[in-house]
Image 1: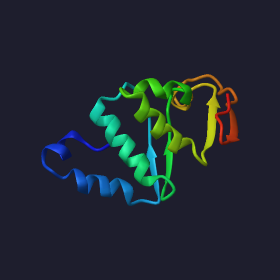
Image 2 (image 1 turned 60 degrees about the vertical axis):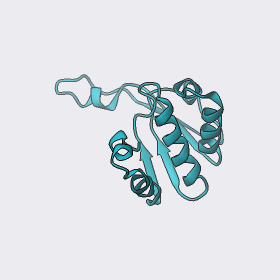
Image 3 (image 1 turned 90 degrees about the vertical axis):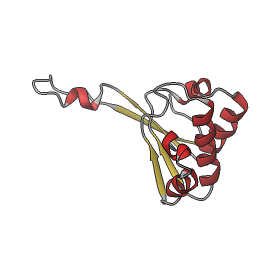
Image 4 (image 1 turned 120 degrees about the horizontal axis):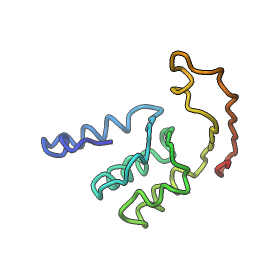
Length: 123
């Protein structure tokens, strides 16, 4: 997300424009830990500005149902997550970690399953 250093050196607007510019923004490992209010505000601003203007891919080890609790403000969380879910395609991958399978001397990989739905999360 927008870095705290960009806020400190007044380059926040430029950093935000950089994140809004690409046709596709990928947010990887979303939700590893709860957000601070500043982080949540930055995330909301990015999602709100990109809504209907640019695509976002979000990867997470948490199910989307758990994302609400990552925000300090539930109203902001609902608003951001509503925008993310609008016109969304949800893919839930089940199975062993790809990284775990790639370790040397690992046993034969199990088959992963992927479920896809439009507009709602596959479980």
